Amino acid sequence: METSPVATEDRPRRTPAPPPATRPEAPVAWPEASAIRPEAGALRSDAPSARSEARAALRDSAGVGLAFLPLGLAYGALVTQSGLEWWWAGLSAAFVFGGSFEFLLVGMVAAAAPLASIAVSALLVNSRHVFYTLSFPLHRVGGRLGKTYSTYALCDEAYALTTGEQARGWSSRRILWLQFSLHLYWAASSTVGALLGSFIPDRVTGLDFALTALFTVLALDAVRDLRGQLATPALAVLSALFARLLFPGQLLPAAFVLFTAALLGRRLATSRTPRHA
Amino acid sequence: MPDTGAMPDTGYAVAAVLVSAAVTWALRALPFAALTPLRESSTARYLSVHMPAGVMVILVVYCLHDLPVTEARATAPLAALAVTVGLHLWRRTALLSILGGTATHVLLASTVFAR
Image (cartoon, rainbow over all chains, first blue to last red; front, side):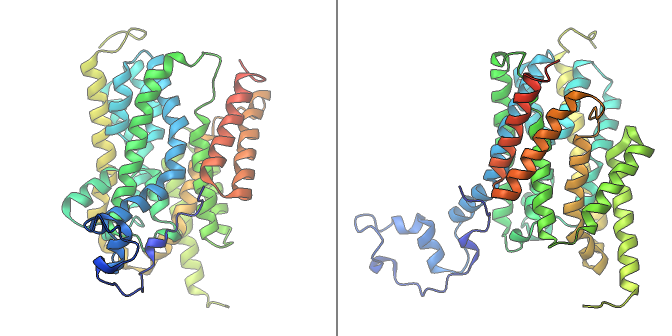
């Protein structure tokens, strides 16, 4: 399977566009088919067609999206095992759309935690999204509706994929399709997981490792984009370990604040000294 | 609100989802209005290059933070992590790495290190 999300559609086609009727590969019996074929659409203008953008987004999301499968199954199974109804898995997956918090939410709802403490937990666990604002390419997403949905579906995986090096040329449509595919994979696999949950024997545990594996893969890819600047991941590990020691109950927000401060400090320190390269 | 153990009341379970969704969306959308003017600065550009890798590394540590390092059953997640990293450095196929790591974990956690 294709590993690199870099799609050929990114490159503007330089081939001069012949009239559609004379194109040898266009089916003779279906001349209007060239209008819906992505290749034909891309040939006529430099902008890729809607369909090829959607297809590229499907490819971009495939690796992560298929990883949502074991994770969604685990989530759905956890929901039914916690005594909640199967549809609640789909509902929470579609509406909250933040995997790591949802796993916590199941436990809180099963224990009938007050809504106020659920709100505070959501605020703390998901506060990292504030930091995504600084680099998520929302300026490339067009339209009020597009931007609204894009912020709504800004999950960790969408952030990781759209801020990677391969995503620099992605259009509004491609970003939105990517987010929509991820959203769909997650909601669907959670619902299926809840429906199948009762069939998974109680002895089978540990499906939730899919979340750790997913973040590990995204971290390795992001570190590779830095081209050997290992100081950044080292600062991140240190921030997380300090946060774990100092604020064990609030590891995530504490780690993000420490990490951002460390990056800003490093930026200040390096901008004062002249570059030697 | 029902007692723990019983199935939670439907209205409450739906309200919990809506509250979480509202808080999460606010965190994802509102900062754009406040922070967009900062985007053009060179510091924001610096952060945008370095943050994604650090954020994902922190999320990995977060997932592993309650690892019982002194107990034998910590072997399952650590072995699974090694498989994930190894597969990814070798083949760079996200799906293979994630499925390989997860399968390793399920296998070990359900058999050798089953509680």
